[in-house]
Length: 113
Image (cartoon, rainbow, N blue to C red; front, side, top):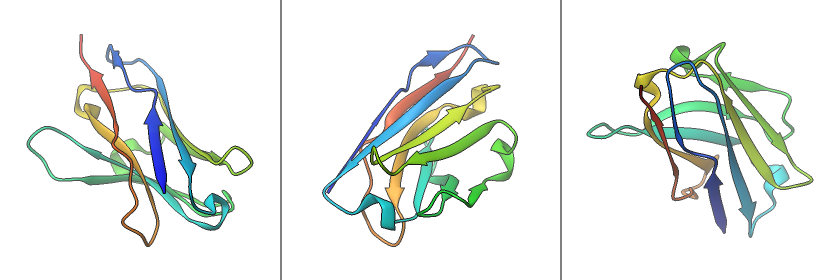
């Protein structure tokens, strides 16, 4: 099983980023997926989730209206579109497969002026 995130970068407040998570080694289309983040000195925080078919999405309150989770099961890829980024969004973002311990190494997002 591999989950490989990409798309992280340093952006100014108010900017946007699109994260991707490429999955392999398991039947991606049958698993609910999530994005989590971990800021320096803090524990992991769940950010957003999506069901296996992509029809249901869920968000942590602080990112509602700013972040959009989606998936392309034909490409075995999970996405997180992040708009109106704030300094408090700075963290290592990683994807995880629901009901498993599978997670990626993460991609760094830094929001700073």
